[in-house]
Length: 147
Image 1 (cartoon, rainbow, N blue to C red):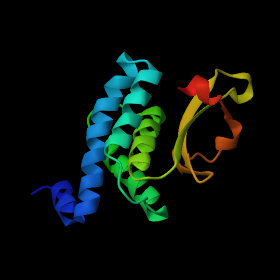
Image 2 (cartoon, one colour):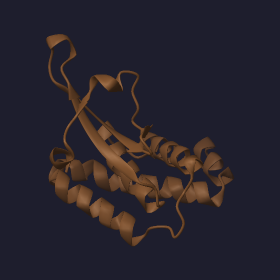
Image 3 (tube, rainbow, N blue to C red):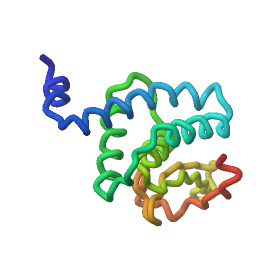
């Protein structure tokens, strides 16, 4: 048995399901960001979150566990990851847990260089997925442009 499989088996059942959910969503969202319009993909993910929502909201610990599950999944699901994929998956998973999570997309122009973009997820006015040390340098797009 590989070390990764042993580690997975040792997880609590709830954490195993979070990792499985994150891996499945990452596997779908990675190609989805290439072939679908952002609005279509996000709407599908938020519909998923609504249809399979938990009956009682998660806690602060839930945000940390979801972030951990996404990080674990992106390391193991083949393909290149991005902050946008992590953000879309994170928003859907947190909303499914009953938390009021919001995907933010921001842009910046570092020292007159090329335009840079970053995606993150906020919950209760704090960044829970995709935080960067310089995230304040990114000007958030208005929500309609991020949809």
